[in-house]
Image (cartoon, rainbow, N blue to C red; front, side, top):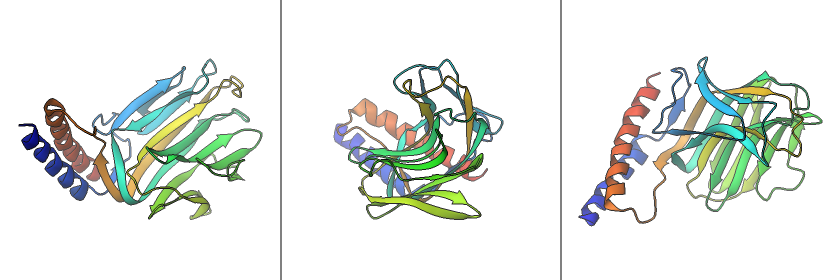
Length: 244
């Protein structure tokens, strides 16, 4: 029985990986697509799909070693990829020490993040695990913009958008393993000056790469059935999203 269910799951996984090799979410329906995204928060910040975008608020009262809010994935990206997202700074006092970013993570990568932040300067930062310190950065005055992460082979490249063109900020040889992508805003007690900040993400796109489910190593039969059902729902959601 378990072998049969495992075969069914593998077939669904292969179908999903090949049929749904791209993905877009413009957040226009003001509702989280639960088969795809998991809203997360800790320490006071909040996240919600409103005003046809994904809004994150970091209250002045936020507390914790790291406090945050955003969307984490239920799936991972396989192969070479090209992932992009727009952002907007809605409430952004100078020196607020908040970071917003598109964050890649995996079992062997650590992390690879493209970040917009406000510190002693307004910055774009390529916050990659193992990168030289201080992390590669460039000053900016942008109150809205675009972030991008690509992978070619085992090399991940982080970009920001300026004057109508993508600008590469940093690249690093990392891994070709499946990776998750999150959209988050965060800060830390040790640097946060208790100034409220509010940001938004929009027009998230995976233009290259296969979106595949993250699964346990040895799933039980009940888990396999649930995962197969979830993959079917994810396929339906993918069709709905691509028709927006």
